[in-house]
Each structure stands twice: as structure tokens, then as C-alpha cells.
Length: 150
Image (cartoon, rainbow, N blue to C red; front, side, top):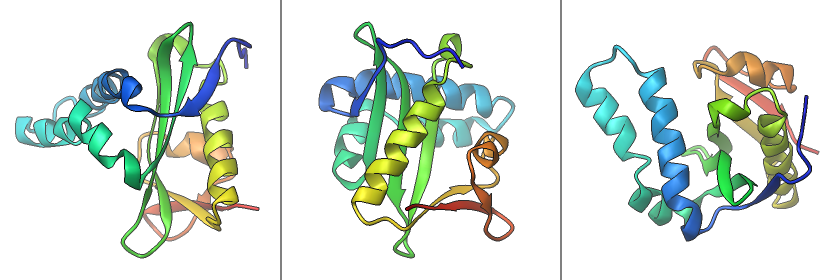
């Protein structure tokens, strides 16, 4: 892990929304390559700049910023069952393997714990489920990974 000390993790603000949208949409486009166009379009619209801003109040969203540029994002959302899950974690490809994802996860877990969240989940079907397993997330059913927060 090579973490630059100039990377700052902060709460997402409206000023970050365009960059967050672009980062998430780029990752989704790559992840959904080969899917039906309608499915891709629906997924992309969920992360438009306007939706990022609108949904910010109901989520914990943190961004990693390097040299005034958003290079990573993590979104935590409430579930219908009253839990909290990681909706998205994305790091710009040119910053992979620098510890940015780990920094975002650590920040989100710490802040969620401070807010009283006891367990954080993520879909085991997510393309990065193996990454979360390396960070202490365990199978919690067939389609869910979770981690107890202190």
C-alpha cells in the first residue's frame, strides 16, 4: 500500500457531486459492459449529479480528494430492514493499489460506528466482494457480507 499523505477523506458536499457522479458512472459502465442498454441506463441514472445531491441527506458519503480532485468515494445507505450497507466503493483506476479504498472503508466504518451503526453490510454479488472479505467482511447469508462495528 502506497498512501500519499496529501489524500484527504471528507464528507461529500454538493461541490463534489459532479466528480462523484463521473467516477461512479465510469465504474458502472465498465462493470455492466455487455448488459442490456436499458439496465445500464437505469444504473447510470441512479448516480447522476442531481441524484447524488438529492440523496446525500439520506446517506453517509465520503470522498477521497487528492490535489483538489475526487479520486475515490464510498456511499453508505440505510436498508429497508433498518440496517446500513455499503452501496458503492469506487477508486479512480489510476489510484488503485494505493490504499485509497482501505482509507475510505476505515473512515466510513469509524463514522458509522460513532453514529450507532452496529453492523455494516455489502452485497456478496458485488464485483469487489473479495476485497471486502480481505477487510473483515464475512458471509451473512448467500448474498450478503457484513462486518460488526465496534
